Image 1 (cartoon, rainbow, N blue to C red):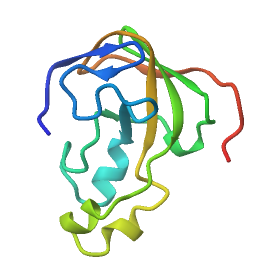
Image 2: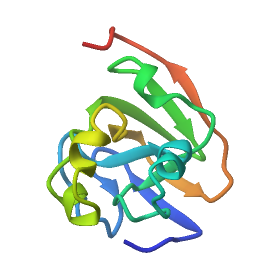
Image 3: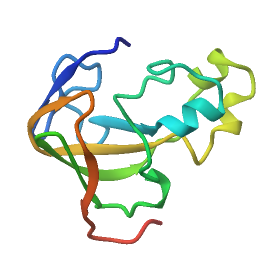
Image 4: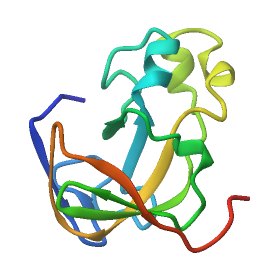
Length: 128
């Protein structure tokens, strides 16, 4: 993972150059900066694509739409912590469960730049 000043989101594909590019649902992983801080992790360490502040991701509904820069993203589900979390710190996989962030697909492509506003745009179904 590397920090970039901007990323190009491609409709239905994800972020250009990302390992998850082309996947159906796991196109963008969004995490809250507050979660990283609480667990003492540096940005990028948890392999998140988009770090947000002040937007409670776990309270957003499935199908919720988020405007980020020029893009529109749709939440496809929670990100379940994998064993990589325990590689970072033993016990982190379980400790971060429920706070790992959300996965989204790119509905409308465009550029996302550091500092761009990220806000809820709409929702279509309740969180399960």
